[in-house]
Length: 387
Ligand code: NI
Image 1 (cartoon, helix red, strand yellow):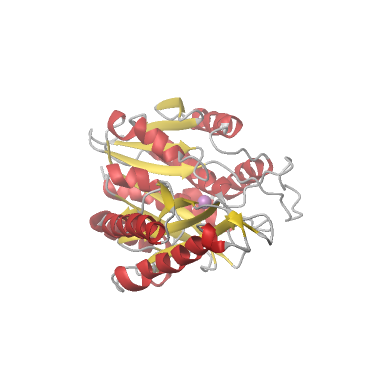
Image 2 (cartoon, helix red, strand yellow; image 1 turned 30 degrees about the vertical axis):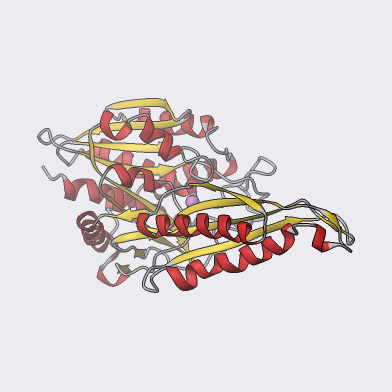
C-alpha cells in the first residue's frame, strides 16, 4: 500500500485520537465534545479558518493551498455514535452507558483529521479545501441541516468526497460505483378505519383486519409487478397492528413499512401505486384509509466524473488490484446524499476487514486503515487541485 509516508508517521497519533473519540461517544446533533476535540486538533495543525456551530455541533475548517487561488474541494466526515451498549471489552470501550461508536464514525473523523494535519503542514495544492465534520448522520440528517445552512454555497465547494469503513471488505480495499451507491430510505404508515363490532356478526361490521391483510398483499405487487426488474428496490411491510380480543372486530388497523429506492422515478412510481392501492383497497371493502409517507435520506448518487477521479486516486493509494469500481448498490442509506444533491462528488467504501458488522455491539473501527483513508483524502486534494 502506498500511503503517503508523512501520514504513515501519524499512525500512533491517529490511533490515540480515534480511541479517545471511541471512548467518548455522542449522539445525533449533540456532538459538542467531539467537535471541541476536533477543533482543538485543527488549531494545533494551524488550519486557515475554523467555523463552528453549523448544524449545532458541526465544524467546517478551511485550509488554503500555497498554489494559486482556485476551486474549493470538500471532504466530509461524520462524528456521531449510536444508542447501543458496547460489548467489545476493549480497554478504550465507551465510557458512556448505552452509547457506542458502532458505525466507525470515530474512524471517519480521525481519517479527516489525519488529512487535515498533513494538508495544513504541506499545503501542496492550489485553491482551498473545506473539511466538513458533521453530526447526526444516524438520526436527523446533519448533512441536510448543514446544506440548509448553505455550507456548499458559503464555502463555494465545487466537488465533495466522503468514505465509510466497510466490514467484510478486505482491509484497505476501496469499493465504489458511479451512479446510485446507497438507497433512499423512506417510511410509510397506513391507518385503516373500519367499523368494529361483535366478531360473531361480521356482516354488521367493516373488518379493518381483512382490509389490512389485503392491502399488505397488494402492496407487495408494486415491487413484483410495477417496478422495472432492472431497477433495484425494497418495499417491506414491517408492522401490522389491530384488535384487542378474540371476539371483537376492531374499528381500526394499522400498517407500516419502509421503501428503499435508488432513483426519484422509482420512488415516485412507488408512492403513486401506494396511494392508489391504499385508497381503492379500502374503498372496495367499505373502509377508509390514510397513507402517511415520510421521506428519509435521498439516494446517494455518485457523479460519473468525480467517481472516476476517486477511483484513480484510490488506486494511487491502495494499488490497482485493491480498488473496485463495480460495487453493487447498498439498500442502506447515508445522509452524504444531501451534499451530493447540491454538488458533484463521490462516496466510497473502505475495507475494515473481518470485523463485526456496522451497528453491532462488537463492531470496532480498524485503526490500520486510518492512514489509508487519510492518504486518500489528502491525495484527492493534491490531485484535483495541483500547484
Ligand atoms: Ni455510518
